[in-house]
Length: 261
Image 1 (tube, rainbow, N blue to C red):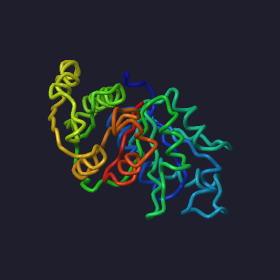
Image 2 (cartoon, rainbow, N blue to C red; image 1 turned 120 degrees about the horizontal axis):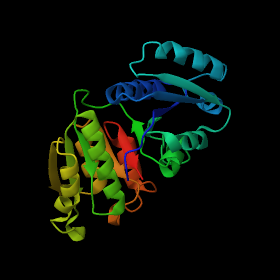
Image 3 (cartoon, rainbow, N blue to C red; image 1 turned 90 degrees about the horizontal axis):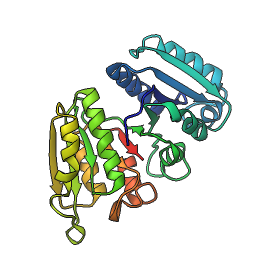
């Protein structure tokens, strides 16, 4: 996986979680000096739990443009579509550096993974997708990435290194091992070595813990600015976006989560 060129792409619907994602995406665009592109789907606006159906896409865009007047990003643009937000974001993500979404979590019955825009985009977008949750520690800067030796975790590791280098933040590489499903001790070092050489400015720490991957990553998220996971893995990670691990990490992490294909 290579770091993609292009803008920070944001899916926006006018709700509280969208505004949190907008602030996060704008800060990132400013830090990386990349354009910020905001996509508004009229269907998403109507379907938003926190916005009345009378509000409409025009009102959301008007409010958005007012907010963007104080944006930090080098440049901003807004596109309105009359199609479903998931496919529209996947299409626009072809040329984006990464795609940003709000978590859209509402209580115990909320599900980002079952039948949601987040599920569609994390499954089908060609590049990294960040689902923004308010961090437990707003002062945290480090990125945490989970590795397990698979091709999916290798893509996540490459993104995490590149992002940490570009943003100038430290990186923590986490290897969660269940006693009966451990992997060779040299695996993490072998994965890290070429990337540490490629990105010598990145300060890296590694940690191996005896825990399930979802529990380990959720715990680590409490002191992280971002958690990075691969969309494919081995063993317990193999169904990251299909089962309980997806719900544990994407719904319960205490910071933004980047899903990397």
